[in-house]
Length: 113
Length: 113
Image 1 (cartoon, chains in turn brown, green):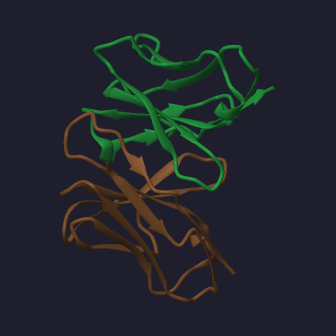
Image 2 (cartoon, one colour):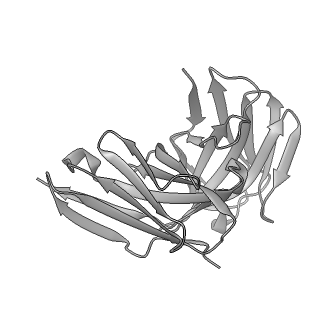
């Protein structure tokens, strides 16, 4: 069966420090990969989307970037964190078939101080 | 512009009774609808989906109803159990595209023992 791993679960970082969140998927190949952010009391906002290695689409302008160095690895990064980057970040995968649901990791709670 | 709305931020139901969670959408191009359940500090878990060619889909205690003319979606949980207490998100997309999923803001369901 497919599993998705995301780490760390929580992270506290000072303003101006770099960020690297990692996500890996097991049990499937060539998945679509996603990074979402959930703001308190709000729905999920898509940040980045990838259909394959090295292929990244950014959905909203922001201070963050994403990379996909391997088929089942997705990384969310920042060179210099802002206070507004605090939030709950979720990695997800889906198959390339139509009508395929998203499957989420357990998320990372990022607090920028 | 909220294309997917969950107008009730919270709902309390007695154990054993029916829970009905509602969702409205505005985009007539949406043809694939999903419900997710989310516990605190975890990622959302896919529950059930429905495509626009159906008006009902059932999976165990969970049934999703789709009223296309009213642009309304509902999730019924029967019977409700304390373990069902969680935040429920509805989501919708056009052409079954996971990339274009739009999420509602969520409804906190509390099932009272």
